[in-house]
Amino acid sequence: MWADFSHYLMAALILAGSLFALVGAIGLVRLPDVYTRSHAASKAGTIGSGLAMLAIAVGAPEASVATRAMAGVLFFLLTAPVSAHLLMRAAYKAGYPLSDSAVVDAMPKNQEVTKINS
Image (tube, rainbow, N blue to C red; front, side, top):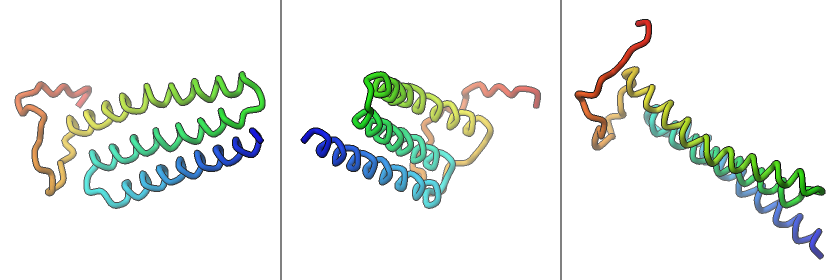
């Protein structure tokens, strides 16, 4: 009984993770600038890979495998948003423009921009 349920749950989690990854890939192609593309890739990638690793944890034959998969999910949740923020901030400081459809630029104009070896 549990084996059948776990297989269905794993299939549902993998399907949901794949759909999130697909939405992220579509966002990379369709969105107008580097900031919105990065946002789509980081959020959808984090959720998609997290759901796939959760499926591994559900179907793991040993507790050690499930524990490592859950540690991977936690690692993704802690590191992906921070790295996406740092990449977008670096792109802003490098001068990548916002798209024409952007409503407001929330970064202060008088902020110090430090350039390394430029």
